[in-house]
Image (cartoon, rainbow over all chains, first blue to last red; front, side, top):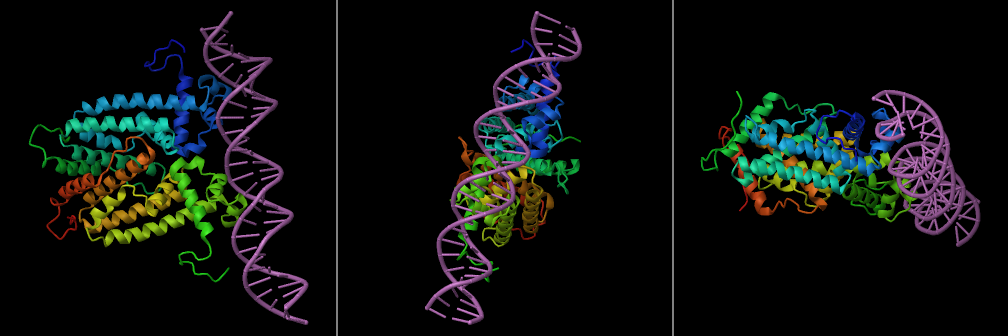
Length: 202
Length: 202
DNA sequence: ACAACTATACCGTCTAGCCGGTACAGTCGA
DNA sequence: TCGACTGTACCGGCTAGACGGTATAGTTGT
């Protein structure tokens, strides 16, 4: 392993990241089957030998992607917790596919999980658990937290299906706001008026 | 063509259905990649030649599965509409993977859609639209209907991920009831006290 | 000098699809 | 009623190409 810093933007190793980007992209756009070593290498404008120089096997490529996903998701959990508009608002708004690095990595990970890769399933399951616990902290009723997570999951699966479809269900900014207002209705009734964090933006 | 009835249970042609069952099973259990012609044939205890006699290509196999899924989903839409406990209750309860023929076919279809098969995406999208319109009829607010659909989607994706995982999120009968009660809270506030159909069972 | 590649050739396996053949049930004219 | 023939349902061997992975010799920037 090179002694390069693991969190630095990438001063000396862009190729590795480009390969991961290409792998991710192919998974998202074409599913598991189209993400072959040859096509990943081609998409990253690297030879197959070059790919295998950085990732000794396809498993290593998967591990690399999953590690990146995990890191992004950990950052995101902090963002949710400290979001100015409140965790629920943030979670719901970012559940619809925005093209952020996390979104792309998450969908790519989902493809691998659908292919029954146990590592991918584990990582995804951990991420979900982390999100759930953040929401549980914000909303004091576990059932409500569960329902909110389900809505978030639903948004994710819809936006990942609609990513390249005709007639996307169009989750506009306005409709998201209405959805969040609706979720607010779930909250205000079963908590004991303790501080709950569902501030909505103007 | 033999003069056999097309809708009859299957007096003389079980092999075709067995092949579809096997294809479905492999998609659900092992994802798109493991559902090869060889393994489908083997799982149905038919030779590869036998498979190709019934389905001339893998595309034909996919079409067969999708046709079956579509038929099951149409039946289901009627079931939702006429459910004694109300459409919302029925939809939510059946969103958690029960192993019914529809569930298996739906998850199999999802795997194909994740593999970016446009036909699968279309069929899934149609099914979702059909469900949504049933819920919209039952609940008069489109936003609420949308939220309920999202919860249903979330349940589906969770139960299909958890199908063979350690630590399934355990959607027990009791927790489902609590969830439905919670959803009831979404309803009673924005409709104009017109009849709305969210009766819960004892 | 060395890391970071490229290019090319290869190997074994898997995959989709094709094809020739078989078994057998039914039909039909003489 | 029997032989010729037809259609259905299947078997199993085959091929071309894709795939993951190996190997190795050469190139380039620092």
